[in-house]
Image 1: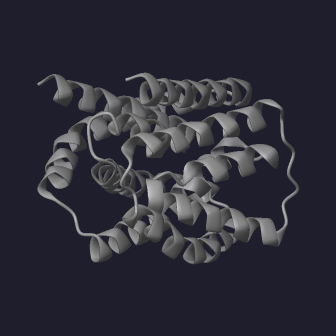
Image 2 (image 1 turned 90 degrees about the vertical axis):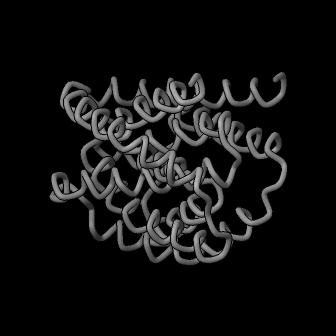
Length: 241
């Protein structure tokens, strides 16, 4: 019962973050789901629910999508998916896996805090898509490279949210399908995902309201807090518990 309550809290908070920021679900959900599930289970639960969220939201925000950039992300991600699948299939050390994820989040936070500026180029568009493809299929977290790129290029929050969700719709579907084809799944993953659907819907409704209250500065600060808290918590839990 305790694990179920913790699971529902994780999904609820992550769903709110996804709707209000455009990237929060996988960044929030995956690290904390690793406290309750094996890596392959946590990653597939995240992919299933993230795909559901993208399907739910995309129609309403489709007008804000940067379709030219999204297509470049998609093309780049196709090269990254096979690499990510190989990583996913070779994961066998949960502690090491969590430490790698936590360090990645903390490095991303530092780069954002120091206001790393990036100039958009076609090559970088494809490269970010490729890195995101690797991270989606391997650890279920496409958000970090996209977030860093969008922050570095000064993308507005409505375009960030819409474009990332549109890209997620593609990359989550491809990553989930690839994992199911090559590594399979289990009953725990689908039962947990079904239980979480009502919580996801409730979280999306609240997140949609919050999105309109968050200005660009608050959005940026909130991003830093979310990434640093998740990274530090996961690192401490991996090393000391």
